[in-house]
Length: 393
Image 1 (spheres, rainbow, N blue to C red):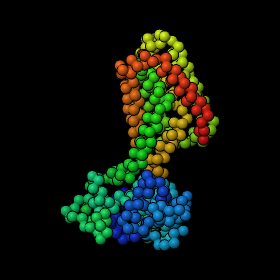
Image 2 (image 1 turned 30 degrees about the vertical axis):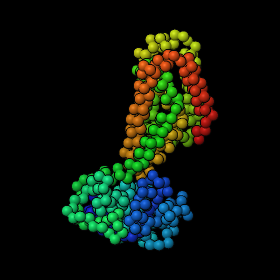
Image 3 (image 1 turned 135 degrees about the vertical axis):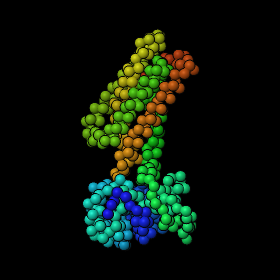
């Protein structure tokens, strides 16, 4: 069978004939795609049997969670695989052993050897598709959100006995576009959650923000912007490292994180020293502008160093990626998180640079320069202390 494309009749036939789904890899996390699928299938009156050894004995949406397919005491029609492609072969073997009728691999999951084994055993196979999306597409329900259903029909969808949310799947429809929108619908909630977590962290007061504010008021807007771009570039690099697994690898080596920690603390102390020194100078404003205003590269490097010598940034990025990327997610999901957060970082830090380099802000800085520099120096000392005493395990 050609698993690059399935006819609507094939998918519709499966969804109309089966009554139970065993979801392998089901998550209790309410922002995970697997949780959405479990909830949706339950809403459509399917029997859903979550399988997750880490949650065995607990419940997801009031449904008993089992450690393995073999532990399920009732018949299973469909085994829905929310694991990576390599794990699909072993799960398919279990599906055959329990007498399942269909092996369904989620978006991004494909194992041709597993498909061949299942078909030889008489099972139907669907790969790189989501039953939630396929049901909504074929029923026309997905069109309520403005998403192209890839189905054209002159017949008005009929209502099933359970009400407006339970539409009977249409029998007259055909495809007109690929499955890109399907993946977007599945992974968009996690991506947006990652963006939200990043923004909360970015706009919280810290060395990055205060450095941009101090430079923008005390030196110039141009220098503040250069510093902001350096910080955003550092965030982009940490994001790339995390996307390719380097940050997770780094976190396994305590000596590497300790080295970054000490480098970051030392650099923050250097910034504190400069702030205290400038507070003692009467001519700081004029001298600094003449000396540094024309050197944006200096401030870009400073911003990059502030970000790259912060081990918390590495651990934060691991947390951000875990919110938006599952094991079976395609590469573009992680890439969109990195690119989107980079755009947010650039826009947010540049906004600080512009806001705090306006005439009223500069005038306020001139009037209270000594106290502002002392406050910045004190904060950098405190940030250095917190970094040295923090747990980066």
